[in-house]
Image 1 (cartoon, rainbow, N blue to C red):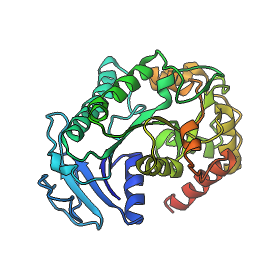
Image 2 (image 1 turned 90 degrees about the vertical axis):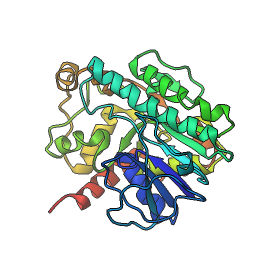
Image 3 (image 1 turned 90 degrees about the horizontal axis):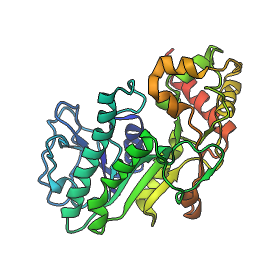
Length: 325
């Protein structure tokens, strides 16, 4: 496959690029000026897109310049690709949700997505667009089982996701296949939602967040990357819930991780303490979203980590292997 990736240096993007290259696929990374690039192969038939300044080569990867803020993206950067995977966007939990940062969260997603969608629409042969999204689309819904057909929520994150997904419209209206990959909590040995939780659990200081009864729909990084590959190749479009087959509670997730670490997880983190630490992002951490992966299941996706205890062991064991000595 020949895949264009935006947001390739992020938590999920870097894992996806490494996986694609390991499988022998060609990757074109869209990078902004000042990024450390790699120029290791052709960008596709007749590419006139500007390559990034070469600072070394990585076989199977070519970096091409773009600038969503100014609308700079040569259509030839996408020509001949099988798919465009868009993972670009400011981190949801990276900063407190001030009014200014809320604008950044929305703008960083809609600007990049809109530019890619408009550019795809201009091509004669249009690649599929696999666009990152989130189960935040559904809002906090208690014990309700949520599928791809469920109604959207009404909170800030649901509105952000709606704007994000709507920005793909130019590509869909031009006939391109568009997938909204609504990802759940991504479990990984490092980074992501567990970046701060895992060290606390290792010290025996972590525990359920808030009541711990809220539903957390999770997926491991391994399966998240596999779900993206599946979305590239399968005959799917529209919303696709990227979560494990069985959602579970926050209490169960923290308990499983603690057990894999042979540590207790009995000290709950009260909601007021979370709000002091992370501000309005607390609402997302304690939101209850019981999401099931209907489209993935129907289209033959095979999970590597379908069971929470297996996922927890993988997270802990991989973290121990990668930890500095």
